[in-house]
Length: 330
Image (cartoon, rainbow, N blue to C red; front, top):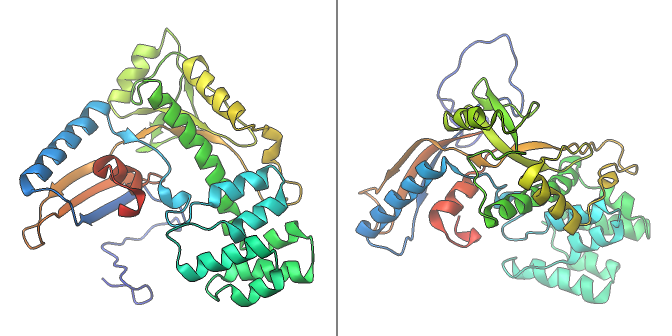
């Protein structure tokens, strides 16, 4: 059945329930993705897919990185702005958002940002910034009317965009911690003493409860992980951090120290509505019902894949492991 209100949205099934549907109240997402322009023969594509399926099976999944859309593929600036906000360096946050230009942006956007960076002329910049950069223009207009009010300038942004900056920085820290664990050769789907593990509840990772792994329970915990009933976690920093111990705890504390994170920064008195809580997040995820097909109707160099992921898991992170390609390719 086609929804009459949303373009290209189909309702495949529906049923009555005593509970309402809220944002985020879902089990997961199903994806069907067609990859085009693969520079390999059909036989080579089959080899790559077979090797990838073996890797996923042997590793128990793939690294559960936050995907590129969390930071921006064309303009990966959200986590940088977020860090400046957390450090209460609001002027820097504002001008990074306004002026940091990237090569893949449209020329008109990049020229406007570079003009403001070089000239610091807000009045002229307002004439140059294109209309579609509406958030940037709103900030510039606020600063023209309220010189030096950088907190107020950030408050003209929609609250969900402001939160995106904060969440992007939290995600960046998580990705750094996960990358460090991989770099040090520590397993993702096997718990070590000191790890914090979350169980699966009603089919989903239960992030509100965790179990500390010790010498006595490590064997049992790893059995649960192999059964898909538990996950090793890493720190997603926030106002109430819970660190692992052992090797993972050392990694988490080292990354936090290298970033200069003082956990008091996760309280922003200038933005009292913004709550910045942390949690433990699983470091690997499994694709379910994973299938690959080389479609006959498409041109050479195509691959179709279908799979399910838990909610909060990024298909772009899965595709990154499959494609091993620059982020703009996926």
